[in-house]
Length: 327
Image 1 (cartoon, rainbow, N blue to C red):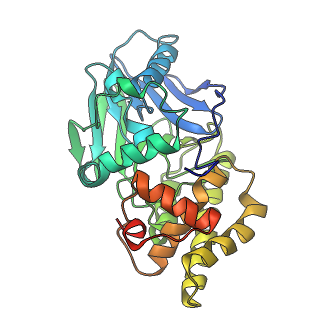
Image 2: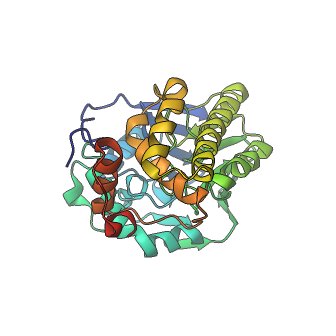
Image 3: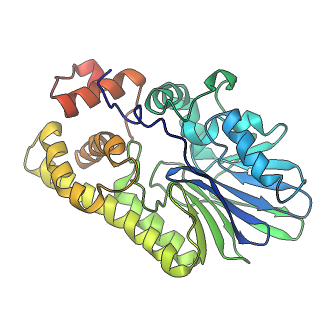
């Protein structure tokens, strides 16, 4: 494996924040690592995104226990990626909720994604031997469902394609608080390896129309007022739109993936290079943007082998075999 692949050099523990967004609503964030959300109802707790391993889930539970002794009865998966879902077994007995599209993606590519992400994020998957296997939802829904936690209304919405085809947000309409998953990032590079670029801005518009006043993004700190929420929405929209415009221009000019990648890095680094996991994400992001610009609507499956072959091709100029390019 090439030196510096993905996040293999990022082995420093992060400082965790557990911030109250409103009575019984909390954001669990960690300096650009994947976030979780916590909703405390009358008799139970709901967690948004389960973390990467049961060990990491245990830390979320420990934070919950500082504010309530109510049991965690529900886990909502914002999408299917391993760093979000494989800690679910740590919430013993909780029902797992996901969109139908998310479950379909787990069926199609869940195991490949698990193997891929373990290779990309060794720090997040410390203790991976405790993961019993893929995480499967107990409850699925097509577009929207409502969970009543006593008097507290929780809307779970398959808001549209963006970061993945199954993207789901958790919306508290009375409190106007949203847990947005990776549809929105803040100070962190959107991962676009499984993205739908043409749809992403529309998905962000759908979130904007709901009018959240506070929002927990997929990565980055909790956004605590409407100005910060709009900054997160606008920043995510700008990044994804800028990248897709570069890819479409490159494809129209007949350029290959390598040329597109170097053009994208030159154009994007001055504006976004300081965002968390920029260097990790960009080879995956450009590969997907290039595919979509060429008309491939359904993202290719990332495997551990394809990850490394693509990285070597774009970062080191080593040729990829046809079987490695498309798996």
